[in-house]
Amino acid sequence: MSTSDKLLTEHNAKVVVLDFINALNAENFEMARAQLHDDMTFKGVMGERNGADIYIEDMKKMKFKYDVKKVFVDQEEVCLWYDISMGEKTIFSSGWYKLEDEKIKSFQVIFDPRPIL
Image: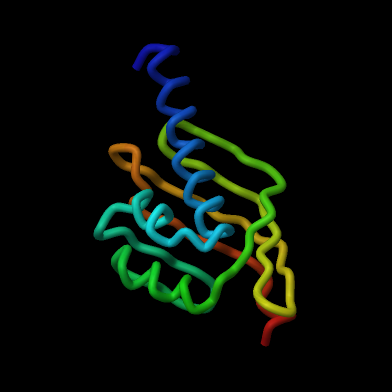
C-alpha cells in the first residue's frame, strides 16, 4: 500500500467512526446504522451484540452520549478515548473499531464498570 493509499484509508476510517459516534449523539440511528456492516460484532464490559440491527435497537433504548477526547488511527483500525454518558453516570472509556470496506465490522469498548454497578 502506498503512503497516499494508507493516508486515504486512515482518513476514511476516522470519518466513518466519527460519523457513527456523531450519529449516535444526535440519535440519528439510521445514519449510525449506515456505518455498520450487517454482521458486525460488539464486545463490551457488560455484554456482546451480534448484528448491526440488534446493536442499533439497543442504542435506541440506551441513548448514550459520547464526548471524544482522542482519536488514534492505524489503517482500518480506529481507537477512541471518550467519556460515555450513561444516564446519571459518565464513564471514561476506550473503543477499538475495526473497519472493512469502509464500514465498522467489529468493535470493543472497555471501561471500569464499578461506578454503574
